[in-house]
Amino acid sequence: MSMHKTKMENLAPQTLAERDPCFEKKTETTRRNKSSYWISLAILVAAILPLALNNYQIHILNLVVLYMILAIGLDLTMGYCGQLNLAHAAFYGIGAFTSAILTTTYHVSFWLALPASMLLSVLCGILIGLPSLKVRSHYLAIATLGLSIAINDVINNLSNLTGGPTGISGIPKPEFFGLSLDTEFRYYYLVLVMSTLLFLLAKLITSHSIGRSFRAVRDDHIASQALGINIAKQQILAFALSGLYAGIAGALYAHMLSYVSPDTFQMNEMFFILTIVVIGGMGNIYGSIAGVVILIVAREWLNQFQNWQQVIYGALIVVLVVFLPGGLVSIKTLFQRRKKTKLHTVK
Image (cartoon, rainbow, N blue to C red; front, top):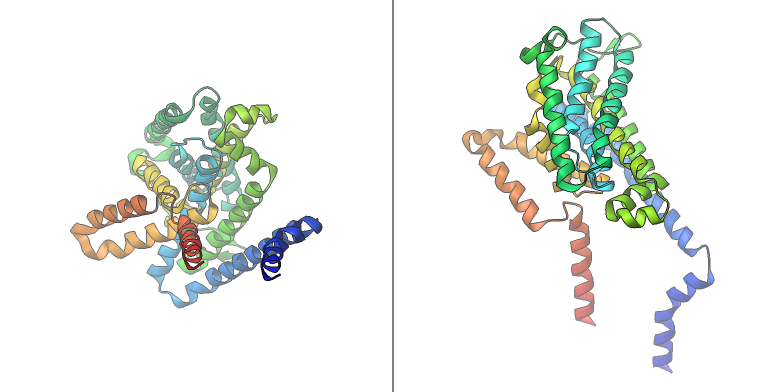
């Protein structure tokens, strides 16, 4: 009798799910509510955090939030859609220089220069995404790398517009209803609002049919075609999103520092953004955010070690890649596996 009862108890959850067609939907709703709660809490903490920091620390916080935009944009292209995009830093530079030129040379308002930067970066993203229709894998990486280098050279050579290697200085700070965002503290809230909106957009995209199509293209081209997914459309859209996020980040960066130079957007910057995404965990927005926090905070903290900074920083990255090949987001999975192993051992 007791053995029969135990079997019935083990089958109860499965039977409940089968008898109640709303069971799975209720579970999904609960999961979404929990996610919304934690996101709201994180935004609240981010909003009040600068009140406890000094000016330099707020500047670092500005960089963290700015790189979140860059990392999420690259993750949508590479992590979700599987397109090896090494031109992300070039889009970043296009956004920065577009806004800088419009506001300094033509005295356009920041609020008009920002959408112009975004639009031009998106167009460049679409153009650079065209090779993805013909090549894949490392061939696509090489193609986008070459185009990225070409864009950087164009920025360097258009010295009448871009200032050449010396760049553009004196970029004005934005104003919001007459209030100049000329301090790190004030500027932070502009960057925070923009990053929050772009984060929510990324969440919407990844949970929508677009996100599912992205993952299908990443995992299997042939199966995607069989399912009726327009692969070319998804690939171009992924590069356009890369341009969108990088263009906005570039404009925000230019007005934050009031100076831009072509050196900022070279390949070392591209590989740094790529490292953030890989360390955080590709194909996971939260992983991109975690990667930004860990790597930028670690980089700033290691400044105290001077000559040993790069050695320690490189060793940290190697350790993370070796022991967490799935990125920082895989820590949760590892703990869950260990917990299950312990439970099985006890039984």
